[in-house]
Length: 264
Image 1 (cartoon, rainbow, N blue to C red):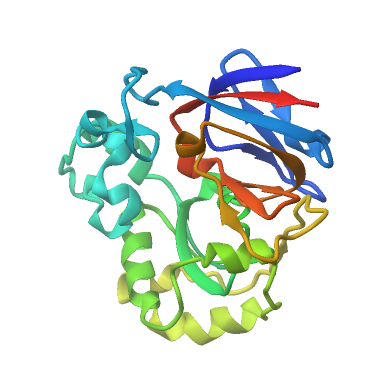
Image 2: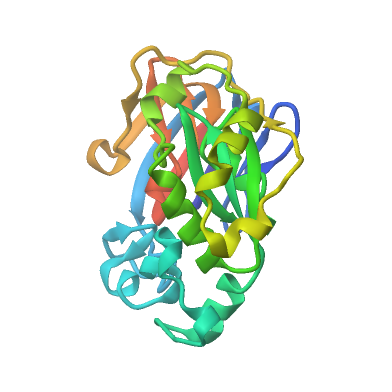
């Protein structure tokens, strides 16, 4: 059976283990059902997630012209502290920015390759943690807008990491941490504007991924360069497909590519 469509980040269902779905325009694949099956991936073309044209993808699934124009790719997406909707100030599209920025946001700790701090909309918990391949996570602050979450993250970055080592995450070369203790340790570094939003009492969320075999030396697949790849799927973690030969394919990093996927 062959499926074809433009890649977008896999949708997930919080269960034990996580259920993964690769969703195309007219079809979807439950990736958990493909474990231990042989899969062929063929690069077909580009399709910008904004304009839909067959133009080289620049970043985040968008062509270069869209990336520098649309609100979905503005700087405040990656740097929440740059949010200005709470001041009624427009960056690219104030209506869109108010819709996204002026809603509850969570500052969290997640352990994927190490303990890191991050920001997400409350509606994206626990999806954000799953996408990062975190096996445990905890909310530490819930604020009413993206700006407050951003300045809190910036303040905590001086005392805890904010990046995930994707190789360590995929190799599962990780250890459990007491995130409640981490939360208490970082409490004093929260900015004054956000101190009243500290979450005093909660517990870790634990996440199990559908992986039969972790790679010893992960090798990233560049499907544009090689045009085609065939391998046996042995796991899914974060937004990565893991294959038996240690090849890994980052779906999120390849958004905007149209591929044909055949299952044997």
